[in-house]
Length: 396
Image (cartoon, rainbow, N blue to C red; front, side, top):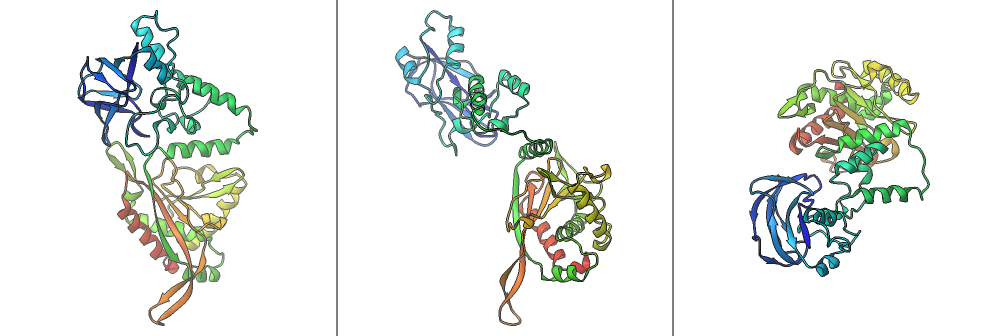
């Protein structure tokens, strides 16, 4: 019987690969796991290996052409015993035409009986979740309002670990055995935003910053600015010097922001809201304090006005309010940057003038960013600017 040679999942974000070399030819006898075809992705050159022992019947692809994950690249003629060893159901296949046999084989892998044969992947291909969705599976998921991220923990039984419709239905049925509660509309909205954000390459840099001058400035102020407002104002001033780092990459263009509108995260019931301070670079810390405090209360009451939501170019989040000293927040889908602030704590600091360690209050700042738009050096310089401004609160 004929066994299909399938384009495997070559990495988490790889959807296709180009054929660059055939390592065997039709008629050759091959062993299981033998290298058959060299393929090239935008990340590396890899090989497709034989799923079983047998004879190469034919290749159905062309050199220098790209083929999607899951595509049939050729056929191997194998014995029924070899197919059975692989876990293929051949009981009803003998009387079928060739194309029908291939279709039956491609859909008849038993769960866990076939292991991926691509070498060098950081994780097994069959643990990749729904990295490839057939049109039929997409349609079924659309019916239920589900996304690929919802199937991240599903190990597929299809070719190269692909999640099949049967795998999906078994997974949905198994969920009914667990206790379930409805997610709020806000939780669903946050989940959708984070799912879209994670489609980009994100990175984080961090920097410890002394807060003693900031805390003294806050103590002497009336009304008192919130700690996150100091960070927001420092970020706005830094971005006013070079707004390109907060731009968005669309195609091969960096879209610069038209205004320094900065949001800040406020925890609400079962989610997070992000009020926006408009033109934060043009207003002093003192002028922003009352408006900032108003927006915090409106967000907690979930009564933010339309002019205080959306359109921000970056977000500030004070995860230190939860006692955390380090975190890696995720930028919103329409943003490139998110600045995080950890909890302040007393740490020893070497004082050169006094020649001894002195206690200071220090907090970690983190800057998470879209790595397509800026690199670690640019992100680090921006974070240094923010830290220096926060250490001189009179300039804010």
